[in-house]
Image 1 (tube, rainbow, N blue to C red):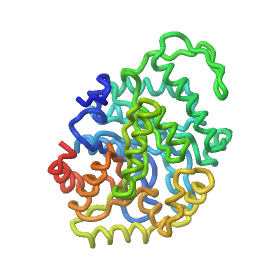
Image 2: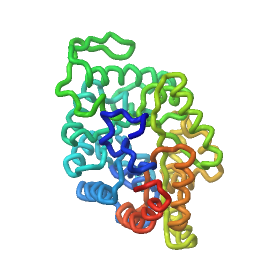
Image 3: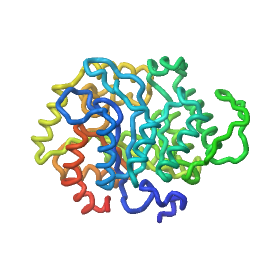
Length: 374
C-alpha cells in the first residue's frame, strides 16, 4: 500500500494500488448524458437502464459511478439534461444494486442543508458498506438556484459558503457530541447525526474547481480534485503544481482526476464518422444556452468557451476533452495522462451500453498491457 493512502481507505477501489489509473462513468443519471445531440443511441433515463450501466461498469472492473447534479434542463429541442435523477437517492439505489464499485452523489451546497446532507451520506455509506463518495458543487446555474429561492452568490463567496457547509458535515460525521454552530452562513443548535458513516475518517469528498478560489478550496478540503486536462504535454505543470501547492500549503495529498468523452472505433475514419453523426444531430440552441450561462456564472470554463470549436465541444461531451480514435490511440491517451500524474478519469459515451462493451473488449486489455490497469 502506498504511503500516501490512509489505512482506513486501502480497501476502496479509488485507493488500492491495483490500478494506477482509476476509471469510472459520468453522467448516467441525466437525459442525453454528455451529448447535446439527437443522434441515435440506446441510452435512456430509466431506472432499469441506469442500474444496468452501473452493473456493467462494475463487471468491467471500473472503480466509480459519478452523477451530474442537475435540477432542470438547458432548453432547446432536447431540453438537455432536463430529465434527471436526484443524486443522493440515485446513489442509494445503485449502492444496493452493486457490490464493489464506489457510488457518488453530487451535492449542490446552496440547496441541500448540511445536516440533511450528512445524514443522507451516512445512510448511503451504510447501504454501500462504506463505498460512498460525495462530489461537492458550489452551485453555478442561476435558474436552478432560483427554483429553491436560493441566492446566487458572488463566485468566490460560494467557496466560503462551501467551506462552512463542509465543516458542519464533517463534524457531524466524526464528532460524538452535539454540535452548535453560529456561523456566517449556517447556524445549528445541538445538531447531531447518527449513525456515523462506516467510511473512515469520513466518506471521500470530490470537488471540481479550476478558478483560484476553487483550486484553493480543493487543495484544502477535497480528497479528489477534478480538473480538465486537454493536452498532457502542456498540462503537466498544472497537475504537478496543484499537487505541490496542496502539500506545501496544507500538508495534503489529494488525488487528481479528470474526464473525457470517448469515441472509439476500429478505424480513425469510423471514429470521425461517429463524431460527425453526433455533431450533425446537435441541439445547438441547448448548447448555446449552456455556454451562455457558463460564461456569466462560472469561472471554470473560460479557456474552453473562448475556443472557436467550443460549441462542437459542448455538443460532443459537455466540454470534456474528446478521446477519439482507434483502441490503440485511445489507450495511448490514457497512458499519457497517467504519466503526468493524473490519478483517475471519469468517462462519458454517446451510447454508454454499447460503447462500454466495446471499450471493455478492445481498450481495457491494452491498458492492462501498458501497466495502468491490472
